[in-house]
Length: 518
Ligand code: ADP
Ligand code: MG
Image (cartoon, rainbow, N blue to C red):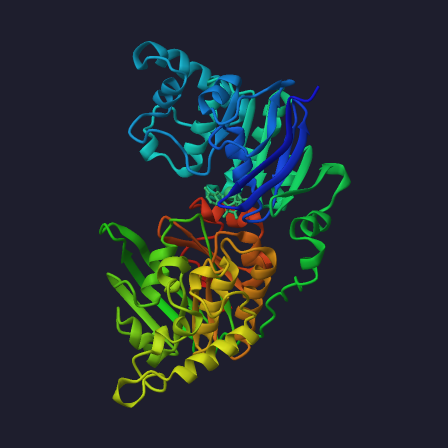
């Protein structure tokens, strides 16, 4: 008998269907991957299993017995253990205290037992955790391991993880995949929600593909390959839109004056803590330098400083050999032609209540040719830019309504159209494909690579190593605010990048390569 049965699960939000008739059996002692692109309905399904959402139709059964819908407490008691993308630990408590709290034990008496159980499980799963450290002092990967131990000590028989590797280094991610295999071998049932094909192959026995709320296929892992799964994820109608992104093949002249030179940059975060320390690198004309690293290691502050939105504490930034005054975002654009695609297109990329045309003149609305005599705005020019964006950047949807009405991919295309429309010398692209579907991702990457043909340079920040290995000529890894190494694409295997992401040095960080353009 299947451990878990979903029968005709449906859920919509405000009339929009998020899940439609999901029917699925999951055997005990297996890892079942739920694969799908952003918005496919994965988290919604998980929230139904955890009792957070009540389905509009359908039923969940555990060992053949119906699970009452919309009852998180009951789901926990029945053995559903959820590892959400946002963890639910108490920061100021230690790992052991968090485990004890979750088991309902009193902190004084329950603690010893909870700690011992967590310790034993950690050993079994190959988890490195310091159960006596406060959660607030733990790196993200360790917090997640505590969360997993917590649900296991609480007695979870079904462990559901929602995109668990987004906060992990590659080494941690592969450790987690191995741990999931062990959980299944010990008879637990694991649901791994992911949009990453590699994780499916690393951990799963079976995979269910969701697309736009529908179950496309459930397959044993031996019956599929990566291309087949990718096609199922995006659908045949869209698969042909994904023209493979050409690997960056620029001939890079490392003796030319770099387009960007950064020397000894120190940057503080909003709280005045040091976020970037002693960062130096160069980007040659036509070159894409990728910045890899787990989110929150100084990448955001670096991007903001280079875009002129944050004043560095020390260091120099030169564009085409000319020193750039700190701050002064506007001057960067007009004088140095620095374009910026921010990580958060909702807050800093677009004005969501404005239409596409207005968003396209945002950056130069205060000067000619957009601003004409007597302060009039050239609406015809704005309209022409919109037409151009629609044709060249394939912006689809309500281009004439507010930007808010566009899908994420189309919003990002609009930002790109605006930024690349100024024929930049340097593009700072911060997670430019985050949250986009496969087709939009390929499109954005292609546009960025096209830009380099004009001799422009690109700083491409991403947490996805596969993406960086596709678009970047060299990859610099940031860890703890420093660049721990710069490697060429050919050298950028996951082990090397992983070691650098953990702060380790594959080669000395002061290596001459760090400053070299090629
Ligand atoms: P995934 O986890 O696969 O990225 P989700 O389950 O989060 O997808 O979302 C599926 C769809 O349901 C999306 O279109 C999303 O916008 C919508 N959705 C999810 N949760 C809510 C909610 N609480 N309110 C409104 N719409 C939602
Ligand atoms: Mg999700």
